[in-house]
Image (cartoon, rainbow, N blue to C red; front, top):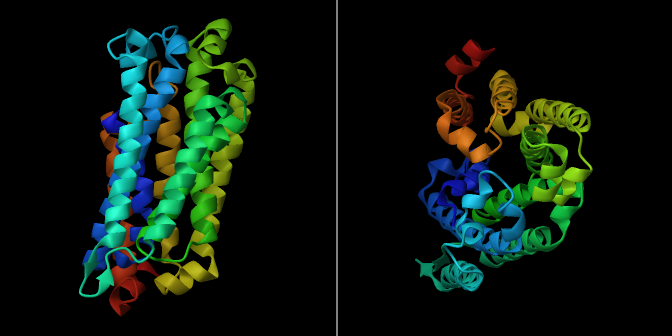
Length: 305
């Protein structure tokens, strides 16, 4: 189930921060349920994906220890477990539709959340069975999976989806996906890398460095434009979100630096083991929340200005 990978569902909670609804109790409940649902769906996909990848995983120095590849879990059990987790996720969403509190549904956009969950499941199953073999499209589909997570988080708390949510999430997660491909290609010899992942036949270190440069530039530029956009200034009542840009740049550069080290191709392991990344994330969340809650106060505005 790779429970540690549920950290990726932080993207489901992102709309809670940027919408300013983190001061209300119900959005927290709605977001928590959405995070749980996407955690179960992600685990379902992992179990089915591991059955599809069992033969290739046995050729990888780390992935060969996965339960299906190592023989500790039978393919039938893994598939049944994956289907069971997906059904549990849909049961939770169906239960939410049926629940009312004081005449109000806990999730006013339950069906929209279910729709995004279905899109996420479809994208990832297509990826597992086919799209991961196609270079460029493979990393784009990984990034789109995170975009769908963010869209679902917005649906869960009933806030309109900002185009900036799409472009910033896409560019950031494309950068993360490309760092993982770079590590696979550089750590393994060419034939071994292509045996582990078919798409790696098309990637070279030089090509991936070029694509990473583009993705990093996209992530920084789109986030900077978001901070300066009139809609953002109107929402935060100032342009002071620009003070978060250095944190974003530092986080991207540090992650890029860390993933160049041998054995650091798993983004979850990098995030879980590097305290500095967590300090940066914590500072970013705190600064954004403070700007949303107190940024319009005269004293704070004067200091930031």
